[in-house]
Image (tube, rainbow, N blue to C red; front, side, top):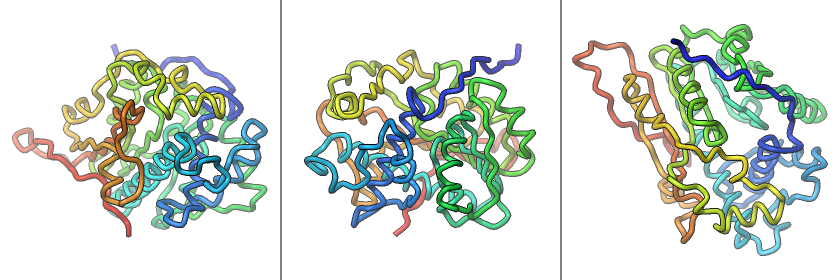
Length: 319
């Protein structure tokens, strides 16, 4: 029997639940943007934060944070999001510079890559998220008279609904190479939903396509409940990430892709901290210890005898 996506939907925007975490990431990107040693620039991020009543008093510069970089939330955790943004920017641009002519942002949230990155002119960016999230983003960007640098197609649909039909109806062509991004998404989904999503990406992609996603490998997420990052996030802004994460068993999505013939590599964030000389490093009781960034490429068709997956090195660094 073919897998089908769960049919549960909701109209939640950015004012609570997982939607509020999009504002957390936006605040982190705003702080990163204003750093003297910034890893990524997102000039729109602070405007999302200031437009939402739920986070009107959140900082958008490290100078506004008591304790500065010693603050576990707005120092270390925000720097993690800045590093993640940079690394995934590099991956997407590299893929677009190769074969991909479509970008699919799964759970796009307040992502502004269509506005801030320099894409090939013949590329299309599809942004999939709930209607409430995309509507909030559009209101803020319209007020700023922001214009995308590439063809941008919002796809307002919950990933727990029939997002495949919505995406293809919006113009996505499975026969054209594509690059997909699931940034800060999969650990909110139950394991079977993650498996469905990864299987669907495989089905909708042709040779020359690519995928990046973030995973968490901890066997017991609750063991890190009292870590500085999770504690600070609860106490300072009222977001209990461990109540939002799915704490059930996680599938081996990287292994599943490898078994399907994809070339995959898995990295810790700390590898890129050392490469770029900026970002978080390991510490005791570290909520980032199990985080992994996975990069996968679907190679050209080949004979079964030659179909031996090889490791990739992840995205290159920009200097």
